[in-house]
Image (cartoon, rainbow, N blue to C red; front, top):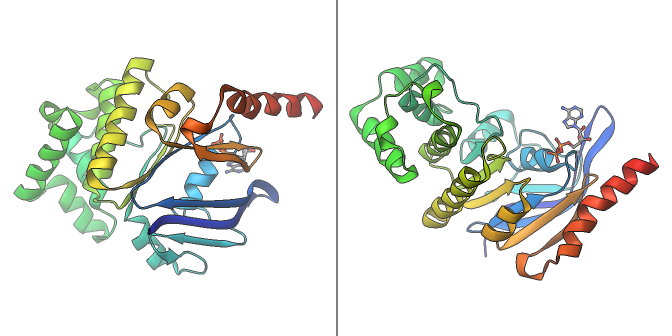
Length: 256
Ligand code: ADP
């Protein structure tokens, strides 16, 4: 089994304070994993470690078969271009059309002017490809709409389309459904897990919504205070495991 991500004793500090530490984690190339845990537990930091946005202060990190330790920035950008990242705020440009936001998913390696040309004067086959991806995510009719006219759920689909247009080998998503109602959130998580399965992409997503995490992911990672507290097949986890993950945090805060 090959691995999309492999961390051994990974750690990140911000201004001398540990955000995550002692992280051992392996995610296979076709695996879907959700990361759960209270706010401040280190979920975002873990995802940023997985795409090399932050560097581990020790241990070992391999992404898509390459060790990130001491990798020069140019090569790191190359690895990052192979990983889609969907941010909590989606990071779309509101006054651009949907097609332009999606096209911007593939600008990593084209230089500044090449990127501008690709986004604003795309070749015909690129337009067809964006249309095909928008069909898959359910909003083909929005191709030329301005992004800021779309609903929250539709914007999430644009962000997914942009990540797919990047032709990634793995997808990371940081609370991608926190800004919409539960029904829309469920649709988006279902779509993300489906497209990753279809395309054989590794998926690692942080989620506030425990019900969705348990419904859609066969493996869950529980984080608290910068550490992994459980990493289990979802079927083996009990309500008590989740209560402990959240309540212990409250106890610690009361103690502090
Ligand atoms: P989560 O995503 O689970 O809410 P984060 O990874 O965002 O957790 O944060 C983990 C810890 O690191 C928290 O204590 C947070 O305050 C701290 N932290 C996160 N980002 C920064 C930063 N840029 N500078 C300083 N501290 C940070």
